Image 1 (spheres, rainbow, N blue to C red):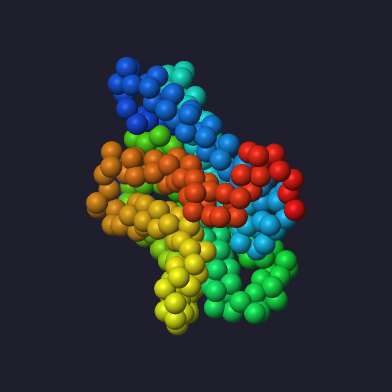
Image 2: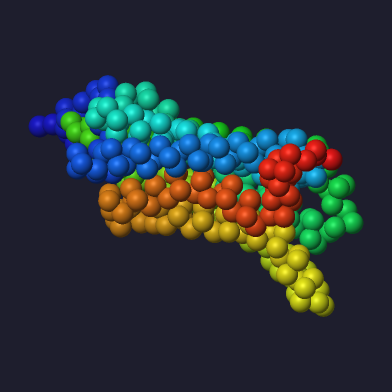
Length: 317
């Protein structure tokens, strides 16, 4: 009589690769999807590279706010480059396989960059809080050393969080099926392929995700609570609008990122739906990175001014 553990081990398969089923199996849609996502990818790279270059060459953008924006743009380039090139390759070649190691690396960097973005957005919120609520002490409180420390801490937080997530999932035994109903190696569909009782791993993943999503979100809420109190204390309506405009772009980006991430990862596993989750993942891995440079370009006077200088070939300074 085999024990439960022995039955699980008996059904376990040493997988060497996974099959990413992608967004659609319709052959007629593959070329359309490829063209669409290739265009989005190119625009995302170009938009974020422009933001990085502008914040490096324009003296008017040499402030803590644009230092963090430069980090965010670099992160978005990395984030979209983790999953989109592989998706494009699968759409073009029809070969949807990914090696076991490649899948683990893709999962690791997806959550590494996603976790880092959570804390980077919190750092940007703190920067806006200091700029609006403590303007006379802004350059002291947000000096170069502090900005570098916040940026490094943001990147390291994602690094360690993702290591825990990835190791928990890829040390589990997998059964015969190697088909991932997704366009990249995401944790929820991977857990569906694991053998035996995965409830402990699911709880551990959920708890870690909750900590690393809610902690920076609470910091963002605290920063904006202080900002709102300060704005309400401004007597003129014009003054309120002008002050709020300095953080409106960041607020939009936070809403888009946290809205989709919270719906995706902070929900009970019983509500998991492969098709809806695929399209939701598409939003924060593909759509969000292309929206960020657009939001900061169209809603930011300094960035628009720098773009105008390039267009009119005027010198910076």
